[in-house]
Image (cartoon, rainbow, N blue to C red; front, side, top):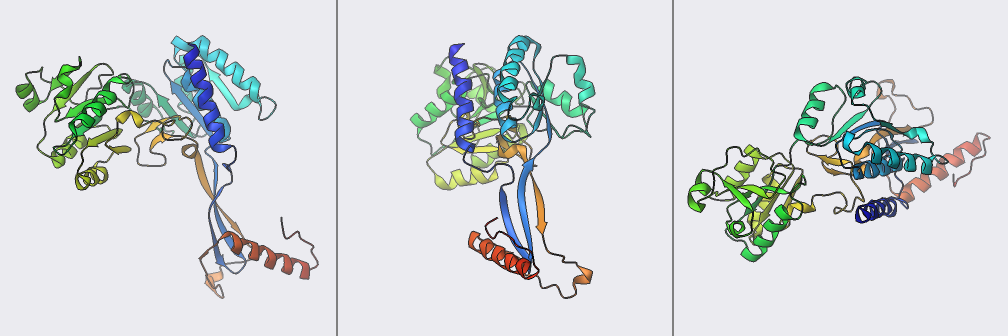
Length: 369
């Protein structure tokens, strides 16, 4: 237990270290001079109100709360009944810690399961739902709400061992992908090609070819997520067949190729349509902390907005800010569009120009504002 608590603390410190010296809200991603005296900025802003529904693990509450506080999002938390006491204590500690800075009301804790259906109907109030848990939980939420849902319903991760792989390297990657934490959503569920795991105490289930060649039980469903020391295995003829298999049975979570052939690796990396695709690395690296995000609210397999481990950036949206001094379109008469991307020194010059014009009109401005 002490190990887990220390881990929570380290995760929070990592979020702070990553973001404390960085502008998060109002960060200007792009600045364009549209026309003379007309400047357009694309800036970051909070998403709004998040509803996070998670099962069991109270460490999710700590990570999610930290990211929501840092991104100025309102937060509603609904944890599993198994961890109600832990969630209540953690919520109390966190809200008391932030009460003097942002207020306790920023984070709410829901303890009744009966409240979930009503919350999922609040599409005019809640901006994003993030479910963390079983396939059944995520699927039910997606079917029950009009609120956008960010997350994944399956963690069917593959490791494909190519004919040009270093077999010792392949063995280590395959073993780690499955055995480091078998219940994790980024653990390998299907091994393509290699038979080294037969002697590692892992229960294997084979596809049509692998079952016959390796004399192992035949898999009944390649969509199955074991979350245990078991996996499916299939033999494929080449990288193209491996990619086809992944697209047919995978969940667009994390897939990895083990090979020393760079051309084959690049083909795999570019063609596999998953949130995270690796070359010569364990699928277990698909994690917010290991990606340097500090923490994550979950892993998204959606192509829209955030994809993969979702940290601070995934909880932000953008807004276009246009600053002018009376410009009108009027059929674009007399408007000379410059559409010039501005650098820091360009912005300083524009401020000087605007200050000069304001002074001419009898208004005193601070050029360094």
